[in-house]
Image (cartoon, rainbow, N blue to C red; front, side, top):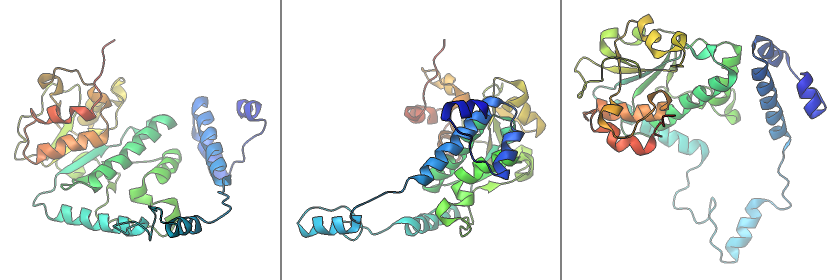
Length: 299
């Protein structure tokens, strides 16, 4: 608070909830970062656009003058906006799930999420939303579960701001209803969603490679939000806790370029395993997915 006041010349206005979040934080850097986020949010709320003339009148005048106006009710081949657009995509998403005889499960293990700093939590939570966005528009969506999800007040606040599939946009606060097939946030363990023998737990340090063709008994894959540099929060220790067999993606085995598997984001992992579950060989998948993956460089 002292550093903040010295920089900005004032102390922030805090509610009881924000005070509690600050007190729960151990690291002073996380507290300072959180105060900066509050300041940005407050500044964004204070910004009110001031237009001398409504945009609708400006567009109408341009249209009357014979100009090409790309706006609603003018030169638009489709008139789909906001909630109408979301409803149509929701319907297509549900239809794409129901048309599959067997929907593979993509499980994200969140057991370590509450142990991380605010910055790391926010980065992973944003990936969780991006995973849904990628799956939402896919022709072959998977059934997504976020297992071992046990948020504290800090993580809950981040989730409510970023997990739109669960909490909805701010404009629909109190009115939003999640899609029936939206990703599931659950405190269940991984092996309570599917039996261990039907799962494949992905770990960059596993000694066993993912089979070339998916075994008939495997119905789901598990990706951990882990910190592989620490044994206590690694995917290796996580899969032992839930007694699921770990596998390593053989990217380095089949590619010339080295790829840092620990840094591949959730949407990319979903693309890899969607094709794998739909019959593609694991040998082929890394080759045509590599443009989306940033190769790691040895130092």
